[in-house]
Length: 617
Image 1 (cartoon, rainbow, N blue to C red):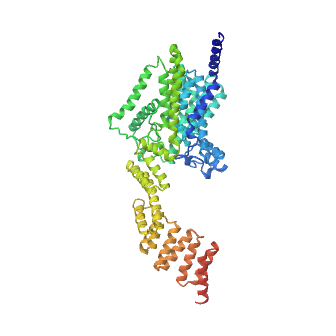
Image 2 (image 1 turned 120 degrees about the horizontal axis):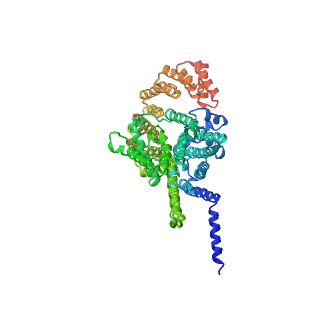
């Protein structure tokens, strides 16, 4: 009986010793990450994933070369990121599960790297900070969205470069410096948001030493700054030139950009400490430098910075955390145009790395607090377990939003019914499902939210026009041609450049015997699209039907000039020549049609007719 307590004590001691082993903590953290992200294992692609996952024309070795040397070959010029997708497509093709698991794995690697960096900086609570970062729901957008592999991949290079540079700061070995610089460059090729790394390192050095030395701290980082600034400016140009980050929706004064930045900082801090009502697209607030209360956001942000600067002699940690947060967020604060600003000034994935600063500050404070107040130390395990479990549950629930595109947009609309992007994209999905009435309702909401946006008007008009056209075609197939003509006229009212709809209308008018109006419609298509062979062909048919044989011949010939191997145009040109009594020319055209399409029965019948007419004029 007396031997039991020591044995029990020994078991507990062994458990504590086991828990102190980093490999076990790392294994449990990775397992927890994959567990809470289980809903995205079988999720699909969303929004612009199809623009990022390697396109068919880039899947060859030559395509891989284009990814690196041709700006515009990919949606954004991040060649290493797109090369990773190129490799992934070789591994699992178009199956989303591989892409999702790779992104979750990258997030796990990043969390483990964060532990290494914090350990090297001797910051308490390293494992807690990494766990909070790994399981925080604010990170779901970066991990569950396939396109944001660029966030997790660049983040791995970011922390890898930081870890190696800290080695260089300690021993000044050239090998460490070159490796850190190489990792930084690779990270920039994945996403240039990590260009802020050298500035973040200076914050870290100031926090450690209380001052900065030009020779020791600043000068070695100058090449990092130069490359980072160049990469950032290049990306800003690509965003304007290729991604469409320009126009009235990006036309802000410098004051307005400060108002955006100030509000964004508080927004991100709020979501970091109270991660509720997270959504894929947040409402885009109205910026107005004439509204006094909007100045409170940047003003209070500056006051917080001043207060922490005043306290820095007693503790530098809070100021360093805030500086890291602001510096890392800087590319997405509104001073540079990025395409998502078209819909919202904030997004969860913008603070993927920036959130590390406040998370580390709080984790270090909690860890130090439990050590300082020894009587509370026994509560550390249960309290932190509850915190991480709560974060894990929130993350698991947040992942459900990314199941598929329709779920994503419907979840977004549940929190923001007026979202232009969600209404427009859900409308497109519903059109594909044949649910036209519901699609029209969402298109109308999208247009109401951005009535003056030319691109919004065009997208709305084109998508709605296609839906109306499909509806009109279904009416035609049901024999309701008059109703179909009414629908196509509606299409052309709000989308006059929609050539396919105008062509359908002209063909229906021709079938109804309204030849003159059909000719007018075909002529409009020719004016808009002078290389449209079908328009000349159909106009030739209309002229032939009206008895205008010279005009018919001219239009058939123009169609054949654009598309010489069109058997139908060759046959109809032969028919026009035959109607004009030009039998030899007709025979030639019918023979050419049969040379192109030997099984063209109508052309063979017409050829026999022409040969008989030639033999017996």
